[in-house]
Length: 269
Image (cartoon, rainbow, N blue to C red; front, side, top):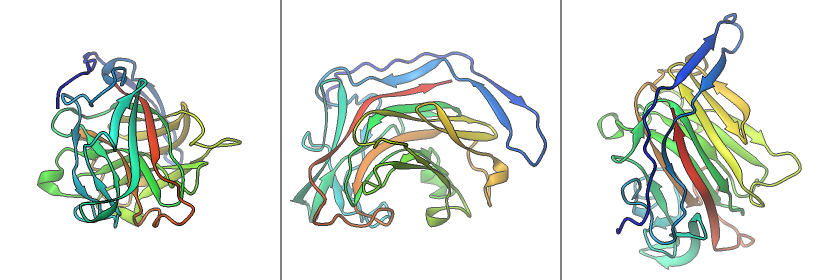
């Protein structure tokens, strides 16, 4: 695709300070991930930035292992940039043997990073069976497969629960339904009615999960029941799935199309 966007690439030194504590307590972490390494602000209408993002194409139930119902495409009907936002659009339509379409983009082979702050400002869709996510996969997935490569779900959301998001980690011995996870509940509001910033801060021995800069979970090697596989580069994925083991299928009350709006994606070190 023609590249109509500019991403920001800066290199600087990040600092992480660890404050000692007893072995019975979580390690308090003070971070200084202030130096912007890459961003996409989605400011120019049209196609996505092909120097940063590429597509996964195909049936969700034929290669991703989650019993998803959509066919991922790169069509403007399913993904576009408009009015300064990335739109990932799930539709109910017959396409290539599937009854739904959507889109999934990733930075695999284009931008992969070990440690830092990864964040995105997003307004989520809603409805039974709608499954948006902002997440990371280990860059060595082609060599060691999943879950040995590791997975960090910065934001995972069931459309039928518009006040809740989950932050999770998958690795050998703690994957799928056995992931190490914690939920964040939005008080007196819904994630589909406005924008929120979802992020992690990641260092050698911790991953902190945030919603709107509120820390709601910290996971360290002591918290996982298997190997810690998070000391290597990971790449970014953003998608909206339809159906699947995490959310179940849409029902008669699910309205389509459903759109995840992304204001920006930023990575700091």
